[in-house]
Image 1 (spheres, helix red, strand yellow):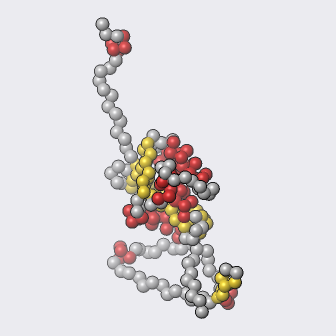
Image 2 (tube, helix red, strand yellow):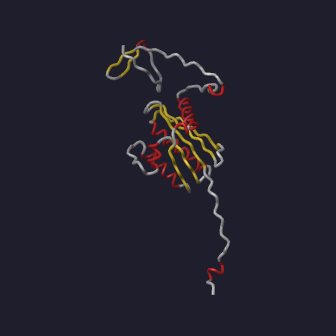
Length: 204
């Protein structure tokens, strides 16, 4: 005689719900370490359609802090938009392996960012993170650089050279004279440079 449980059991298998992944390519950078920093990210659906582009200027931060800021922005967006399955692609090997548990987080600056990232990851149903070379992360890199340009007051170029079919000659370098004292550069004539400018020192 069948058990009571089998009498009421539905023999029809319940189809499993398909897992719909969102992929985030994220990047962060700093012009100087620390220096003017920003992050960028491109969120795409399973068909590769762009769902959102994220970017932000962070002020003077390190490159690793900027990388983590990009990851946190992706996690926040996925949670707010109701996407519980997230794949993240980053060119920061350090951050990827720390999130994967392969590297320890020794920096006191990164520890709170790491902890917050793990807290947000725990709110997702599924999460994956992988490392990719920079040339495979070019859109996120572009957004991060645009964020840094905005923060530094730089105007974006009218159109990239690859779109116009022309190339612009490089701007002539500005030559400033100065001297060093105790490891600090002192410019002559009251000249000054804004933060984030790279210089080339030629001893005379």
